[in-house]
Each structure stands twice: as structure tokens, then as C-alpha cells.
Image (tube, rainbow, N blue to C red):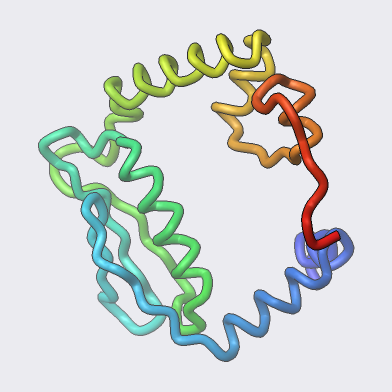
Length: 151
């Protein structure tokens, strides 16, 4: 067993069992994407193309979401053993679309105004990490936390 699998099994054995079950018993279907083109040129080989050649395949907010959804879905398809990632047009990828970056920076500034702490605001925006209700209250996102009705 690889050290990666050992780490997952040690940290979250339920997730490991769940992923093995899903890969074994699920036939995942790939949706149509706006910014990606997915094909199967050979058995077990999936080709994912960044499909925004007019924008040099720069990453927009939609592309970030779709690439996450695409690779998550491909990880659940047992027939998928190889993924080739490329870009349509002249360029593989032009980086992050500046318009999206400006929007993310503006959202980080708004969150900073709410939270009052630029370090925490930027961490939440740029990492997307999860946090619980207690931490949301501590950093000022909510004013009160109430007990769950069911507990």
C-alpha cells in the first residue's frame, strides 16, 4: 500500500472505503462543459482540453469550477487510467484571467471589511478551507450561533 493511501486510510478510513466503493460500483457520466472538451481517444485514456482558445485558455471562474468537476468525475470512472491535459489553439494556458483575478481581489476586500482582518479574509478566499460556526462567529462573519434543533 502506498504511503498516500496509508495516509488517507489513517486520516479518514471512511472516505477511503467510500471512494473504493464508488469507483467499483458507479458508472460516472461526464457532463458537457463550457470551457473544457473531453474525449476518449483510446481505451482507458481520457483527453481533457482547455477550450477557450480565443482567450489563450486563461482560467476563468467557470473553468476553475469545471476542471474541478471534471477531474473529480474522472476519478470515479474505473475505465479512466490516464488523463492527458492540453489546450486548444496556440497556447496551452494563459494563466488566470485578469477579470476573474480582479473580481476575487474585490471579494477578498469585501470579506476583509466584514471580518476586519485581512489575513483571515485572504486565507479564506484563496484557500477555500472549511470552517465551522464557532470560527465564523470568532472572525465576525455571523453575530450569533445557536444550537442545532436536532441535538
